[in-house]
Length: 201
Image 1 (cartoon, one colour):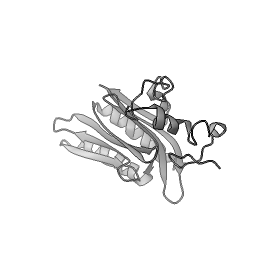
Image 2: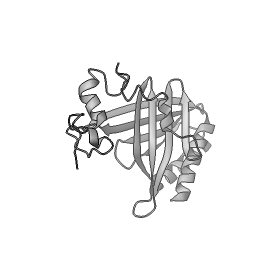
Image 3: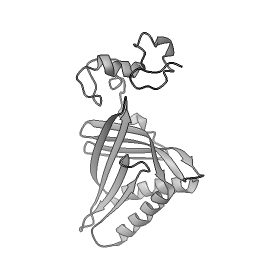
Image 4: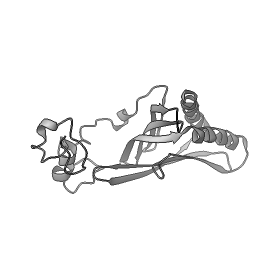
């Protein structure tokens, strides 16, 4: 088994080009030698840069009945259900993508517990029925990896706040924060997704 000199993980897809890429994954080789001084989260001037090869970053999120997308004013949040765990810790794995002011982070392995989703659905409904300001937050199983918060003002206006973290390429950590003013119908849509997820677990 050939291991990448940069991230230490097995090289499989381009194993035959292992020597050509200096004993690394192609993407690790690119960020090590070709990406220059550019931030890893932005495209460089190399046409083969992974970011330049993604025409529509939102294609990470598939629009179907197990997805949630809200996009407004340069803010994007997308969730797609990838798999379920029904045994020891009933939970679901989500792919989460966040774009905020041209910065973009995706994490394809965000686990959220069933009981946390149930609590979020219940407390969100209670918040909507109360005529007062309040907050409801949902967090991932891994601390600081992902959280989404519903914020209600005294005037009954809603805001969706979210934070996503992804760790990749030799423990490089990327964190992004976003916020959108939204209608309650969008919150209902988010809760409906979680209800469907819970029903499968």
